[in-house]
Length: 196
Image (cartoon, rainbow, N blue to C red; front, top):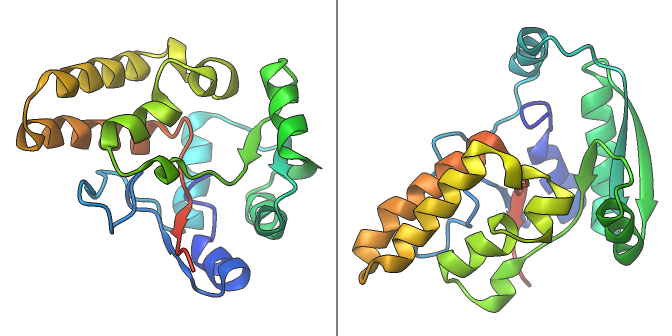
């Protein structure tokens, strides 16, 4: 899915160029930015090859979205990109509270497209990583990533980073987290938008 999405077209059409495709969980402007070992660029051939290798037969899927205007604009592009791979995407749009209540209540969905920016709390990598990837509703109810070995590895790396006394010791541990999260994609940014 990540290789199928034309993020550059989304940036151009939805954000008038005022965003940058993600190459890490953190934006490039953040001090602790580290280019992830996996960076997604639009590559429909690679997406098709990965689908074939995985044994998945594209079929009907549900794309849940919040009613944010930018997200609604992006949803049409996501549908087009995934339909081109043989999927049959149905877009289901609701308010944010209704979307998350349904997901938290166990309602089925295949993909969620929603805005999010924990950096409103600052730039501390530990806080920002724990917001989306810690032991909380995001990993337990929404992405269901909390039961995976990769989740446990990230939790151990974050705990180890917290035990260090300098950022020089912490950064390599955070970098490992960024790499794992980019490869696993339990929840991941398509791009980082500029703030006017």
